[in-house]
Length: 191
Image (cartoon, rainbow, N blue to C red; front, side):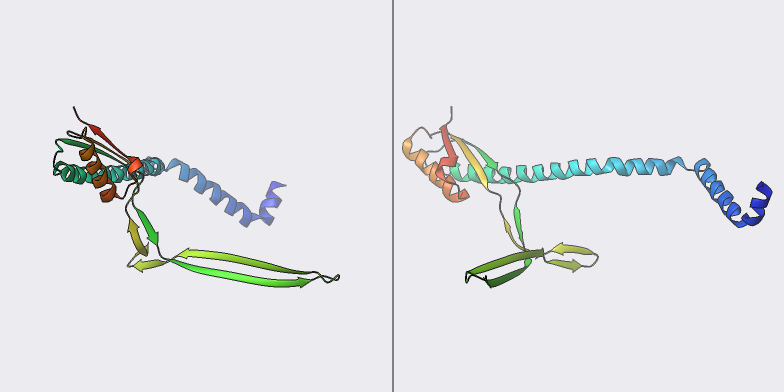
């Protein structure tokens, strides 16, 4: 019976045997270095995400340090203000406003029913797509504007801040420099 089946289906049997042979030899001669490279790729993704978060945090810290250094220098130049310590709390990194193609569709329909009633139906939809420009092999969106991050709050600890007039000057300087409302600025005297 097997012999007659092989005579009729010899080509199929040959293809099956060659396929099984490839599978066996593929597993035997499988190199361990390709396994390591696959494992490395899988573990690289979480590390990349972690690095991206660390980069964002570093950018936020850089903004805070720049603001603090500029304010410290300016506040120490005010008459009656001594040594100053400034802490600035920034909300996030800078915000980029991108160019977008916007398609707005509006449709107005008037319906009348059998009893003479009329209704107006208005339907509108908006579709936005970011405009992307190709620069060589890379694609990048068109950036219209880059906004500095918003400031959550500012703490100023300064010698001389116990005097009301100096405290007012410090609050005014900070609010105007950083465009922060005065309720987000705390000024305290230094020991």
